[in-house]
Image 1: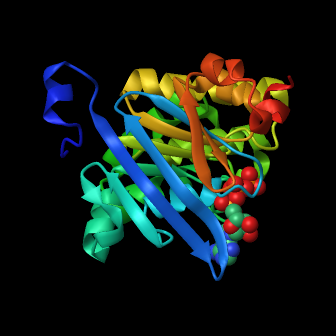
Image 2: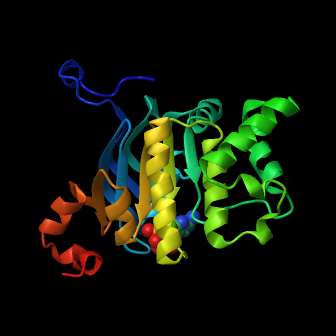
Length: 257
Ligand SMILES: Nc1ncnc2c1ncn2[C@@H]1O[C@H](COP(=O)(O)OP(=O)(O)OP(=O)(O)O)[C@@H](O)[C@H]1O
Ligand SMILES: [Mg+2]
């Protein structure tokens, strides 16, 4: 992994930057979605990007893995300049960045085992059934759902599907996890369990994660740091308590001032 941090920071023992986004711009036609977005992600931290529905959160993380092309600015992920990557380099990067989609995006016609084996076969070219089995069972254990291995997605609750979606991403042991609305559509207790899982992933695998959400309870529970996305700009970076303490007009509906 390339080191993005200036050498002085490294000498001081500061954590390493794994993502550096500077002045990212994204338009669709003449609609400006992201105007000037800058953020840093450091190793082993959970960064929450908080924004209202339609504020461009999903667009932001899609730009980070090259699923959408940015119109301006720079996006450095694990030392790769994303907008400049060839298809081959993008694939290399995507092996190291787990993308947990807003829906759980499981294949309904496959069992849970087949859903989890799929990325191992496709991305890592693992076909040895014993190795596949061991990795599938470990991933299911990580999310507490070993008993679902032979079930179909339509037999699972929304919360279980989210966990399996996370397991399918984790199984490739990514350095960075991107969670898009991990708690959407879940009741508060189930949402809280998903938040616990996100913390557990950080602590077990030492992954750096970006968690995109408009759920303030999720932000409080999982964030080490936060950044708010407001009218296409990244604003107000800080801890949950720091952001809450700002009494900012744009954040008041999140924090219920
Ligand atoms: N492929 C696309 N083509 C055109 N417009 C798009 C495309 N993807 C997103 N948009 C627009 O960009 C804006 C931001 O969308 P985005 O999905 O990033 O919102 P979001 O913050 O993730 O919202 P939510 O919280 O509801 O998921 C929306 O107005 C959306 O219509
Ligand atoms: Mg979204």
